Length: 287
Length: 159
Image 1: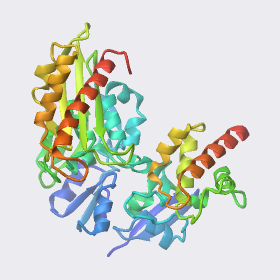
Image 2: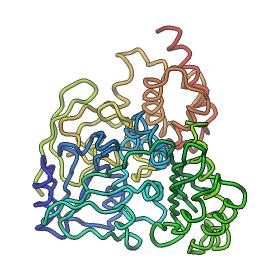
Image 3: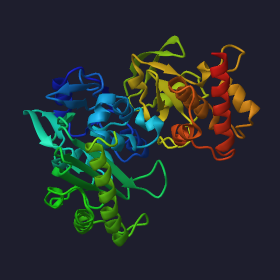
Image 4: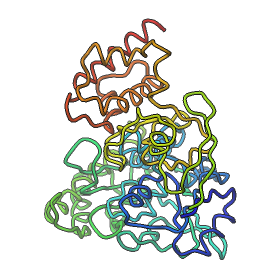
């Protein structure tokens, strides 16, 4: 096995493009475990952390560009990012222990394409895009279009995600992410839910996006959530319609961590709770 | 397999080593540099027994490749005491009997030191969350948490 640490995206793409068996190393919290277990035997590991921009969070068009090697801890320490997108930052911060937070990245979380990835529903609710570099150039893709099946992404050979872009948070806008786990820490989501809301000055919802994790092979966008929530102030009728919409969209598996019925029910409950948090943040009553 | 030449600073001293591409920082520390204080518990980032800091950031050495350490600054448990003088956290672990078999202790100490560098006055809850990635199978967590809180108090008083 070779180890490469290119200094430019072009060099990284070149290393990846001529070798189907090359693997990208960023935080390494999934890659090294798989390597150790013998689940993968790459011919080449391409460490992208020395490429300029990979480890920085920069302002762009009022939003934030987060480099592919930025760790969860670094996101949590960026106060401006937290104020704009608290749900995304909290979702990233829920992944693993302090030690894992020091290394694990949201791009790794996305590209591993685990159905229960915590940061992904929050990113989808936030309308985040991923910048992809590859042999045929650079393209921007919605985060929800990256995972296509458990462990599989829409990335082609030679491509890598170089950053995530979170758009400008509108005035009276905010987000939230909640997950259900049977413990208080260090566990995999049984259900995860990201909600992003924008209100008008009177507190009426004018934009809404809701995404669910861990209840389908890939992240789910609750398409009719916007229709249900827009024009409301999250009254009880809107919330019960929202819960029903989330529960009916959820398409989970039955396993030891939760039955299908339980996960569908929790999808509705968590969506309402996350929506209430996003709403009070957007109203400015909680920051 | 060709070896990679890595230059790093470990516990304040310049250090160079050769390692294989798939060799972890933990294996390098233990098997090549004889720094055996960092322990291998799980080798999958779950137990924290191999906790070290890399450029000031707490990480599991089992989830870092040796090659990645090039150009970074590493601190391990071996860098904690000053000569014969124990760090206040080490003394507090002894005073509170916060260890039995001791395998988890180096990781707990490195993790706790990293906590107190960021937050000299943590609450019990903050301490427990910070140390959630360090597992202890004999002493349990209460004595460890008390030792960390006590060391924090001593360090604040003597600062």
